Length: 386
Image 1 (cartoon, one colour):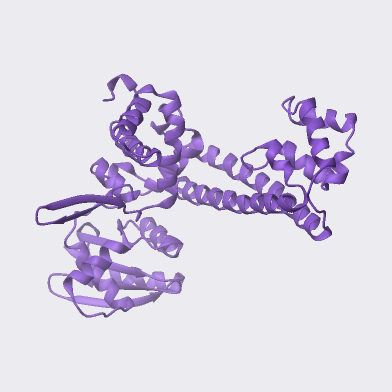
Image 2: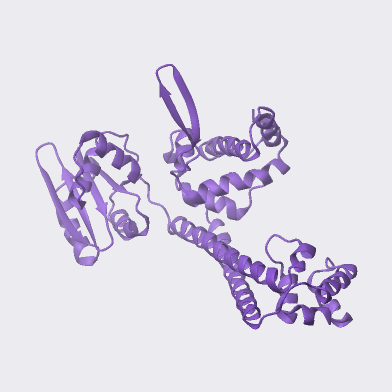
C-alpha cells in the first residue's frame, strides 16, 4: 500500500508519500500551479493502492479536498488531536515542522482502519457553512440584545421586568425604536396602542399597555443622549441580523429538500436542527457504531483508571461544539413530543442526575437512535425504542 499524508496550511501544503521501498516529501503551493504539481507527483502510483489522510483543519483544506475528489482520489480526514497524541507516543522530542507533521499523518494512516470519505455533493458542504453562519449570526444578535438590556437598565429599568422576554420580540423592538425614551413611551396614545396590538397579533393587551405607560412615567431611569444612540444602533443591528438569519434559514431549508434523511421522523427535531446534525456528521455510514458518533460530538466522558480505582469524569468536549450544542438543546423539545424520551430523562433524574447531566444522557440516547435510523434507513418508531 501507499500511505500519503497531507499537512494543511493557508498558503502551502506539505505531502509525505511512503511506499514499501521509498519515501518522499515535498511542498506545493495552495494554488493551481501547486495542485498541478501534486497531480504529477501522484501519477506514478495506482489510486486503488493509495491510503490518503489529512487533518481536519477548517476551511484551509477545502480546495484541496475538492481537487482530490474531482480527480478521483479518496481520502480520510483525521482529528488533529489524535495525530498529536500519536506523535507524542512515538517520540519524546518536541520537533514540529510541516514536513514532520505530514510524515506523522502518513505513519498514522498505517495504524488505523481506513474509512475514505465518499464524494459528498455540494449542498452538504454548503449546509455546514450555512448552519455555522447561522450560529454566528445568532451569537452576534445576542450581543446586541445584551447591549439593549444594558441601556434599558440605565434609562428604563422597569421595561424588562414587565415585558419578560427571551431576547426582544418584534413588538418590543417596535416600541423601543419608535418611542425610545421613557418620556415618549409615557405619552403613547390609543392610536399607538392599536398599531402595537396588530403587530403583536393581539398578544400585547391594553392593561399591559397602560401599565407600561405608568412605569415609564414613574421610572427611576435617567435618559442620556449617548445611551439612546446606543439603543438605536443596537436595534438597527438586531433588525438586520434577524433578516440575515431568516435568509440563511431559507437557504438551509432549500438545501435540506435535496437531502434524504430519517432524522426528522423523530418528533421535535426541526429542519434546521436536522441540517446541523447532517452537515456536522457528514456521511453517517462512515461511523461503525454510535460510540464513534458520540466521540465525534464530544459527548463521551473522560475515564480515569488506576489500580483498583476507576471513575468517569466530565465530557471530553473535543468534538464539534455546534453539533454538541444542537444535540443537547433539541432534547428539551424531543421530550415534549416523545414519552419514551421523557421517561428516560425522568429515570436519569431519579438516579440523582442534575438536569443538564440528564439532558446529556438523553442526547447520547438520541445519537444511538439516529445512527440506527440513518444506517438502516428507517422511520422513527417509539414502540421499538427501549
